[in-house]
Length: 205
Image (cartoon, rainbow, N blue to C red):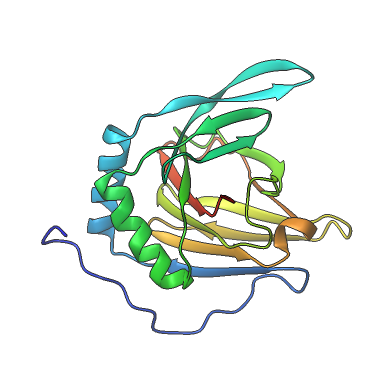
């Protein structure tokens, strides 16, 4: 561990953001700005980014945001009609993974990274309910860079719950949340800076 990095410890309880049908715990910032800045700069330069692709009505669409998929060996993940195979963990990703696992009290075998170059890049309503994922498993969402609004919407009631994801913060989504709630990252012209989102997941072996 580099000398300017310090281990993190859980110091308080966190309330569920959702009224029912799943659990979303926002832990806020789990690292100070200096360390978060270090990881942001390192991941921007050292991750094998590529533009995201989705299949819409049988046609491949290239998205503006960039993505990368890292994890244990021989894992694959299919979402939006695109199959991805894991790249080997980098040193920095393993460091972040260790900290996130301490907070989540779980272990993860993969991480999907999204790079949003500015606020005009976002992601539409969806649930992370692909068959490759561990059913009911926790998804740990770690944010670096520009603060962005993140919104949950209940699939039946259409109720919405908003939160601002801060630089160096952690959001845990678990239990039946993917069955009953959608989530999105709305676009905005107000945000000019980059954001990296790391979602640590468990892929079924």
